[in-house]
Structures are given as structure tokens and as C-alpha cells.
Length: 224
Image 1 (tube, rainbow, N blue to C red):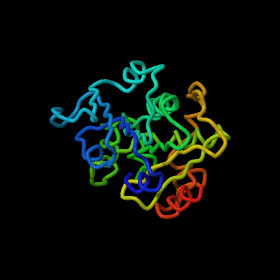
Image 2 (cartoon, one colour; image 1 turned 60 degrees about the vertical axis):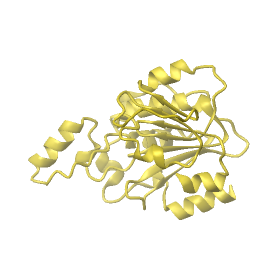
Image 3 (cartoon, rainbow, N blue to C red; image 1 turned 180 degrees about the vertical axis):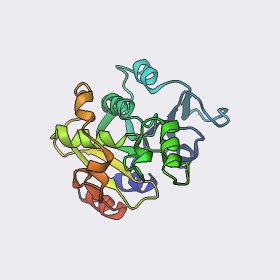
């Protein structure tokens, strides 16, 4: 997070969807920060006027701020771990971005097929049933969002998946000379059913994810 902030010389605002215990939110070095989560798992009391906490759903948050002049330099999407909700969060985020903004999407590379299940309990149950120790890892089917971006081939957007992080993430930013899309197309659930873990991660991560390292990505956005 802070590496991106340094290269882009951000001095403005940060939005995090899906905050939970707040460790990532607290570590981000931007003064103006907004956190959205239906249930915060930390002390919500703060003296800072530059930190805003919204204990609500992301849909309600975006509806509340629809049509405002609010813009974010950096947005981190780490919500429900489902393709459908993350797809909506990304589409809703577009109206709050400027040309230099960056969006980071968490949990786009499941560690195994069990982790790619959108239902957390079922992910755990199937792993245990297979005779594998359940380590608690769960990414959901957020990876389908990246598959969808590849399918849509939106000319405005660049994206890369940073595979050398402890938990890989996909970063989206705007190509020079373009504007952010007004919205994403309506969900095509039949299409998303064709996006399976085995198709995109076995035997290795598919090139449609544009896999790269953190250092190469930072070099790319520095030049671009």
C-alpha cells in the first residue's frame, strides 16, 4: 500500500471496503481515510476528523455518497470474498476515482481449490473431507473478477496481479488518456460459472491474470 502511495505521491484520501480488525487500514500512510464494514472488530472511537468509519454495507455507503464530489487516491477492496459483491464494489468505486487513482483487490489468487469456494464454511468442510488440515485459508471466488476483466477487455484499464505477496492481490489503474468507465456491465452469471479454479490455476496461474512481482509493478506505474 505505502509503496504505491510513495510512487504516486498521493496526498489525499484512502477508502477501504471490508476492514474487520483494522490492521491494514491503520497501516496506510494517508491522512484522510474512510473505512466501510458492516461490523467493525475494533474500537471505533477516534479523535481524528480525517478518519471516517462507516459501519454499514458497501452498497449503502456508495448509495449515500452517490453524486458527491468525493475522490480517492487509493481504494482497497476486501469485502465479502464473493465475485458478485466485489464486482459491484469495483463498479461503484469508479465514480470516486481520478486519473491517478489506484484500486487494489484482495484475495484474487486462491491458495487451493477449496479456498476458491464463495461459502466459507463449505470451503473448510470440503478441505477437511479431503483429508487436508484446514489452515483457515479462504479467498472465495473473487478470482472471477479478474477473469471477467480479461473477458471484457476494457480499453481504459490496466491490471496486474502481484503474485509474490504473502496474499496475492490484483491492482487496477487507468491507462493514460482514458477516463474510468461509468460502470461495469451487468453481471453475466452464466459466464462466471465457466470461470473455475482448475481452468485458471492448474498447473499454474493463468496469464490472463497478468501475473507479475511487486517490484516490476512499481517500476511499471513509475514509468507510466
